[in-house]
Image (cartoon, rainbow, N blue to C red; front, side, top):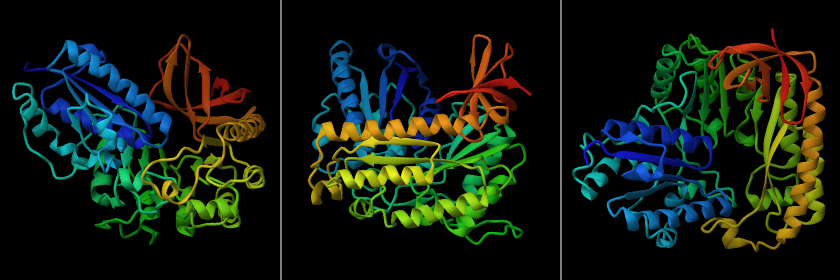
Length: 439
């Protein structure tokens, strides 16, 4: 069995994808080889998402398939990690997964070598066990682009959200570790990094090893300044900001030279009463004031958001307030979701999920229509303009990637330009794509 194979399945957010890169590096280090074919694997690991019921249902379906596979291959080891395992405090979720040999939160990843050795001593050499899984150097999916976590967990306790239960309370990585990881990436050719955190602009450096010339007192703004100084990097992005932590310094740092021309700032709802029940800790007026400050500091910045429709008790009038806020904020993109109850959250304990599925779908459709109309209108402004594109796609006679505004751009090219940051002059603007020619 020595030299066995593993198959890694990842669901959910960019943080999960980053965690899976660390899992892959750990498994590689144990002498296992990755396979893209489930039936070839000796170990299958599912990195799960728990943000919505539909995400969990997909994983339950997968686990039923793995149970049948184990009947034919009794030595197969199946592990489940990620947010489903992290939030399962009473064992109810694991009870629905009898095929899982291992079921553990992401923070316990460092124990995986020992557990695999216990299940099958011939499969792996256990090696050293680290105290912190974030100390594992990832096997990055791309040489040019990389996700770099700066924190895990969250302590905002939005009533609908499982993250504090699934990932624990906020834990910040030392700035030295973050900067060393990014410098090593740049030295190996990375040109874009995306910093990750659940409420990333709450970041507080445990070590605060910032340069004397760093102009910022806010730790997250100071970290952004340091990352912008790394030679070789061309684009810096981050995701997971919370509106209440968009301080003046964090807003000022949006104008640093390598920052992309985009900010994702979840609003979740446009009604003050719904925001109160969600425990978002700001009003619609405060949110719009923050948007105004952001646009004043970086005119032309593209803005994205998250919105939940049909939250507990949301009336039709309150939903109309969300549509009104959307128009006022004039978002470039919105990731819209119909509310689904997550067990263990405060919303599940305090509020009835009293908006019907049909009404949630109607509201989602109305919001989606507004977004698509807005996206098309805003994209027209790029006609004739040159945008900066991080190329990460190659097809038959074309290449593509995301602009600095996080808009998908394609252009004709026989040459493979993946890994390059180049200018493209836009000649056609559609809802979900811009096309153009190389400058």
